[in-house]
Length: 369
Image (tube, rainbow, N blue to C red):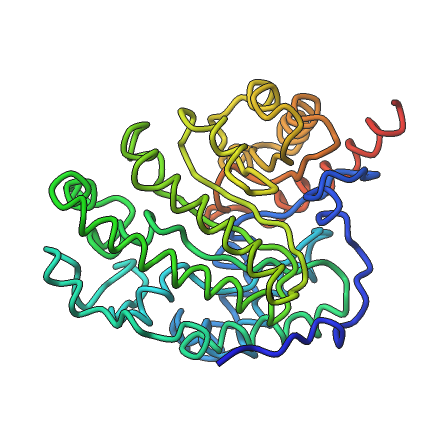
């Protein structure tokens, strides 16, 4: 089953700043968005959830709800992109693993992969476009509801990060069972990572067809691998996703959309990531902007990397940090963001300060040049 290519039916885009930045084109100011910009830190999100008495995945799986939540930060802040309200764990779900996210408990799986024999429980032949059609519907609905105000991000978890959740059950398990798999069952690990890669490519291709205008691959657990395991079990699959998506865009005559990779804590692989086939490399807050600029050599756009904790700072201190970040990254081939997601207890007013400061001071820098 394939999705119709319907992008020509969408309202015309009014703000293409983030797309121009991603493609390396000149921008009059730095575009800005935030990872986890729709969610628990917004009072309207809590009010929506309480009013509708719904669980997290009920909201994800109801296109009208996912659309409304996606739009909440766009209505509140002068952001340059929306990102569809969903979760990276929808892929393990359609592979047959029950997953819930609950207050107090976090992520709860109905079973985890203990040995390679458990891979037989996975629905390897599942059609992710059909099974995740609610995401596609949410993307299409949101594109229309945005009325062209800003572009819409689609996204997926990366193979290694999804594998870690499927084995460890969380991003911070007490024992490194997933890393143990890599060294104990290398063949089975590659088999699982290949399966996940295939599903991710199908999933992200479907998101383009549904109307996503830019895509991000989240490898949030990448840094725990270290150089050797990352280069063997993560980087090849990240590169394969980028290559195959660009191939699909060409072969299926899909809209050509920029690809963003976020591999957290991978200081040891920065240069390799800038050569991995992605148009944008997103950085966590522990990376040095000037160092990465030198490594990238103008080949890719950079994204990031304010420490999310700076959103707790006083207004003047936060503005100084934004100014410092802009000076180090420069105002071209750059997308401002945090170095990870927004923390749930952040004051939304500080998000506004951050967003507005990026725009104001990047415009001033451009005008002075």
